[in-house]
Image 1 (tube, rainbow, N blue to C red):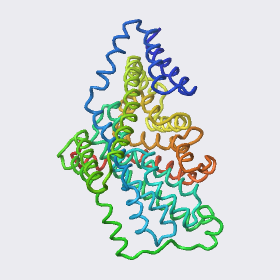
Image 2 (image 1 turned 90 degrees about the vertical axis):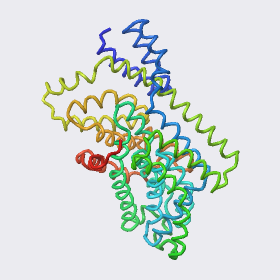
Image 3 (image 1 turned 180 degrees about the vertical axis):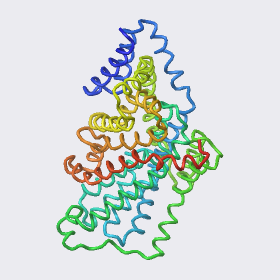
Image 4 (image 1 turned 45 degrees about the horizontal axis):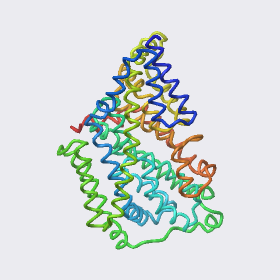
Length: 442
């Protein structure tokens, strides 16, 4: 079999198996090994055997399991409740302030956890009770939180950024820096959208009785607000320990993940009094999640080897040039492909399938892979809330007891905002690159 054809076949087999419901780790491994045997014969088997060692013997992956540990420890503490309570009290005078508080709470929590679903669950468990208390439609509030979950992978430290940086061979520190300004802009866009809907279309956001009464949320004194703000100091300390050590040049992202793990553990024990049973749950959950991730990375490493040996990305620039297609048209097409894949596959699968192909192509066309990383992450996170798959949507529907159809209607206005934001970060690369160019991170 010709090598370029082998790469295309490998991708096709993987896609078919995934759509049939085969777990992604087996889809990656089977497609890579079977196509490798057809193309290279038994000589590919030693490579497959070496992959678990050489694929994971990468300092770039050190941060991944430690950030998972941080998230699992936080889940055992009331940090999420305290954070939402603080945001709620500061925004209580605004109609729709509870929803905006949830989104802002997710943005702050993203700086400690770094995954979308974790941010949604940690903040949502506190927010949903308050939203129902003040007459918000549950599907609207959860729809806003689903969209806000996209901030998890965008605001550093981010686990999807770690995976992208390793697969794309780019600086993790620079990638972390590139996500800061887009993360702030998206937080503002989603929060303002929630406030605007609650003000001008209250029937979308509130139950009929609450919409007729049009009552404002509870008012709090400045003393209560400051007290709520002071209670969030442990989370602020954790964020400063992680991001501060990186941007002050005291630690690499991998080292900062270790610092963050120690700080999170000390806060859980000394401030929140987490018991041994809670720590055991956190460690067990960390082991399970990291085991899944590492098995996927092993399969993805060999899969990337087969795809890379086909040199598909090498031939694409010449093919595009022969067709006379502009490089910005290529970026638009890539975004459309990623959006379509997002409707069918989860974000991790899309990352492992497309990064080895798209990043070399984008780089060959003269674009910065750091900027493309931000665009890529925004795009894939839109996919996790988009039907018919929408992993975060289905998970939130099950956890909070909301029909999927209702939740899709609730998230729709915010999904439109996310698409507009994707167009903005695509059209204006300096939103991602300006801070990278004026700092020394990485």
